[in-house]
Length: 161
Image 1 (cartoon, rainbow, N blue to C red):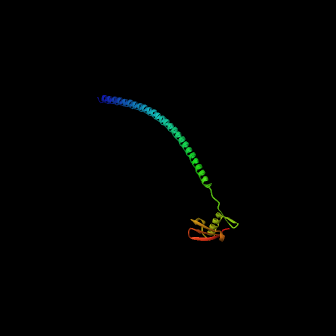
Image 2 (tube, rainbow, N blue to C red):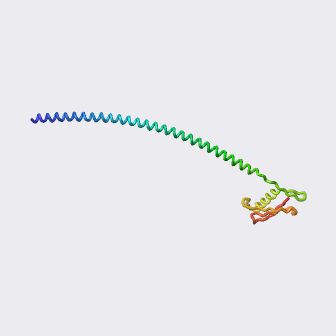
Image 3 (cartoon, rainbow, N blue to C red):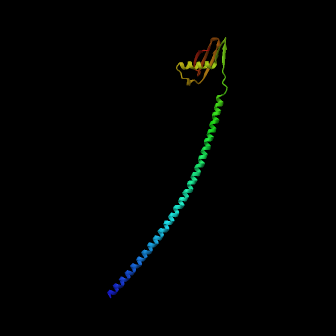
């Protein structure tokens, strides 16, 4: 009896082993199918991502072109503005600057030259030309002299003719 029981047990164990082997085989096949499905799904997802990346790349290129066009417009606007400013400065520079002469007893001098001599005398006395904030010049042709006052403090005299 023990032999029959042992045989039956061995047969059952073999049958269970065969069932388990079949189950493992079926699970492996299912896993392989699932892996193939996952692989296909991943490939499709990668393709979609690559398509979307290409679309985004095209959008970026389009935006870059728009930005470049705007930048070019801005450059042109700046150039036009600079030309206007330059023209305005040129117009300001070409304003009338009168040349004033002083004549006395057959002698003549240009007032601008007298002013320049007054500034030069101020600088020759050790002052800086950039420190001049105000300048008054008094012409006395009968004395052939021009008296000046700089910054309401410093007074001097230069030859008129």
